[in-house]
Image (cartoon, rainbow, N blue to C red; front, side):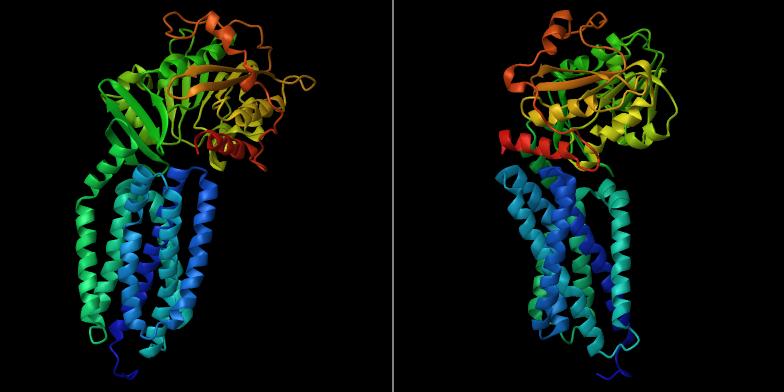
Length: 513
């Protein structure tokens, strides 16, 4: 075919196809990275590994593309294969996690396959354009379209794709997108395609459409294996995956598949988190809660009649909406999120503390465990220094601090970090730091750390009536640590080092992997 007689619409289509496959390719990479963070923890480590494996595999694919003799046929085959491998990646990962307990090999095997196939796409398209004589479509134009597609995917993934589709459906939808590219290419280049390709495309299309139609059922089956109880709510937000399960009157909340509370025993955790700090504070009118979007900590705070204002800062508005408005969930926190004394701020905790100019009598950090660098920074000396700017000379700060038995180094790293935090009210004296612990059946022994410019040790907290777990005897026992949880010499956590995330992951892996 000469340049003068070639169909121009083929050239246009190949550039459109470049854009579409760039979007799909980056979405597969982000799905793999997000799923691995959900299932394996440590998001920075997982994203780094996923990006490294994906890019190196693309390099292998680009090199292998030279051995494809017929670029049109090769491009169509690549689209069919990547639709199957990439499209079924998320279902395969969640199935492996639920049934095989070996998600790592499946993840990186599928990721490498998608990377190799993705790496073949652009060289094959460039060869097709060159062969059909598309002189005005230079190679850099192909790359520009490819990068534009990657940009669109990176913006759409957290804002549209995950919240509206979820990982499993998103994987299949973009598999269908690759099949659309393959189907249009089969039609436009029908003189160069084969019956075998058309048959393979049709089979892949039927499988993908069937899986999409059954995606809710697939998700339900997988979740039934992942969770002990019936899943009553599951939703992916731009920040995390929210799952709620229920058995009779027992409700559990999971964020990114990690248990956050069990309504059967959450009162132990929340009483120990809230009441010692408020009970030791001479003034308890203005309270700041960072995290705690489920409203349980707020429920305990509002037991104290002296409390006048509570500011609750939680990044994910969907969590606070659910626990404020849902008829089955709001009663769990005694409708605390609808209390007139409480204000909800959906914002990043660091940004809020950095920009706020208030001073609080008690600050409660009900944050997720520091299993990745994003969370670890909220347990850093730098963040604690910011928090001290929001206090008075008699304020008390308390943070949940993980398991002093399972992640012993991580717990004492938090204590050490508070020990090294400057006391802005008396530069010659350190902060008073008081670690303590309690047994919560859902989690085991759980730790907390209080810090204040005033002396905390040997003080008895003023406790409200009606507590189910905490009393003066329990408090006295809580501040003593047995030998297997006793203090260790560990490093403080800083945003430059993030030793806490490593301590945390190493501790839990030692016990449960």
